Image: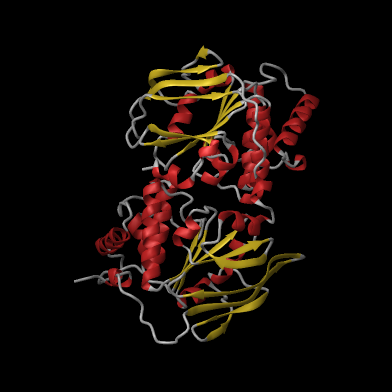
Length: 517
């Protein structure tokens, strides 16, 4: 017999009535004011059953404020919601949930000391005859839900032991245990692998078919036409437009930023020099869960930006790490400025003139509790332009001013801890660390991940300036428009091998994507 959990998410079309409105939630003039700051200004929106309504905008555009009011976690200053025949606002999360709204936020609400199953049933636990948690029933209930959603989760695992992507899946399971009328997903794929992201996409489309209304927030533009029906663009707290999800990427970028695509990407350096980085038949030691990287060959010239494209797990990040001495090389060679240099340690790479900026800047690149100025100057003290010297106050001031100017970082914020900053400003500090060295080859791994479109142009200008100064740049990115806008050439990786190369005049999204698989 099918469980109640499975009945909540089974494949059946929602009940429909001829001529009946599909609007399940009408948002009328929603406004939020903090002191003199208008965080959200007079938002009007209709959320319909069986449709995915994408919310698109830069960091600070008002998206989080908006969904927090729908979820009952934040009280509007003005405006009202119409749902289930009632008008008003939600004064609590419980009121929102009573109307069938569930939200999965970027900041999770899990209890690390509990298991996956215990977190999923939390608040609606199955009880035994004496009123205690029926653990086996909780596990079975969680198992059925996990299997139905297609997620790879162990119900017995403690949440504290799970990577962030798996924790995201637990949050989604919690939200779907009771089938909601409206599901809010806030950047749901930000921490997911390619495989898990595909499972989520399948789930969203399945829920949409069943009639669930979905509000979907994303920075990833390729997800919009894949999942969405309509897109509402927010900028500085204002509703700029609501357009079809098939709207072109350049038009969406213009709506979001107020600038055209041409204004976002700088001009390419036309003058390429000698080969600075040459990879020949490179093979890496085999690792569990990582594709075998064998016999990879390519080169990067002075002044050139070469992109590496491919799905998550194709081996592109491991290739970048190998260049920096973070992976064991078992065959082939790396030649840097005509010198064979198979690095065994990052310090060796930096000393030779190669810098690597990791994809996970918070865990691998920055000291989050320390101020920006210390993060910027620290690497220069150890390896770079002031290595081995006593750093005098004026010398540090001059260095920090120079670095801040080059990456367009606000100098008045140098004393603040890194944890205070947006993703864009954190990335600027990460980039400045590379400039504190004497570097000729830069490897950037997902340099704009978690950075909104409004903050990206300054990062793009930084890369273009490095190129024009003669640096060789290897740009690893999952963002095809970014690669198209910045690169002289694009290499495609699939299952640990380079499967195709495209010159700039050959860039074509469909042809490149074909080589991903």
